[in-house]
Image (cartoon, rainbow, N blue to C red; front, side, top):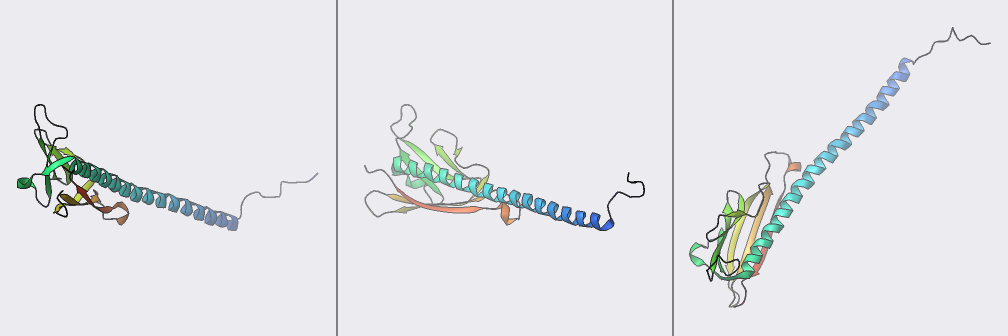
Length: 174
């Protein structure tokens, strides 16, 4: 029979140091991966929010222009578009006015007799909204320029995103 009483069980100092070094490398790698994933999430989220809002805004604006009968000149400016339309008329009216403008950093659409409705979320801020009338044919066309940026106070570039979209839409042919 063997005598085990004289043998000591445990770890040497070298074994503990090797274990701690390997454990530290694994922990640093895992934490680096989670930090990279977090930064990627915020960057993608900011870009997605800007893209969604700019797409929605351009669709609404071009649709309103395509359905309009005429441009209402007295209130149309570089940063506001006023249209005469028979789309979504108030009861008893044969035509109505639609205004598209920047209201406190958001793009708003206002129908005559109704309050303004924001067509962009508060997650983005309007940097540029401009309308330019183009007279290439007898039917007026409008060039639209929209630039939005992600609404963040963070100075980190990972959390910022901005995008510009340009389009041209023609009023319906009357």
